Image (cartoon, rainbow, N blue to C red):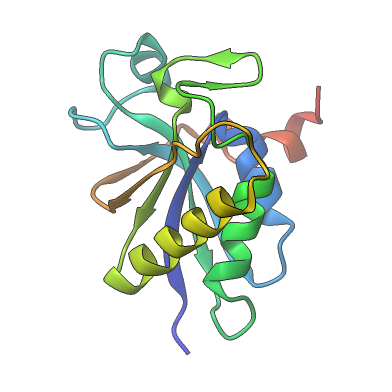
Length: 154
């Protein structure tokens, strides 16, 4: 079975990347930017809020080892999908909760997973995560890649 890719935005990409790097069946997790309206954004530009980009992690996974439903469970667990433009102390539009899907099947599975989370009443507020078809992904600067492994968790 061929590896697949999906993109998750769940707040600061350092923690999201670290979460997915630990998941069996994940081949690679790369910090980057998606969803904006400018080409080749920089971290500084994304943080300014002017590019429309979101800090995301592109996750490559082996579907013969881990199903998308399980990856989505990790996604829902690693952040609060009910807070607009915020995760913990990180505030700004670049911290939106979002899923960028590469196939129609991924979109269907992601929407079903979101609907099930909402119905579970785990969160008192509505799940506001947006689900979009994947467009351009821009890899973040090298110093962002595998950040916690390089610098430790603060």
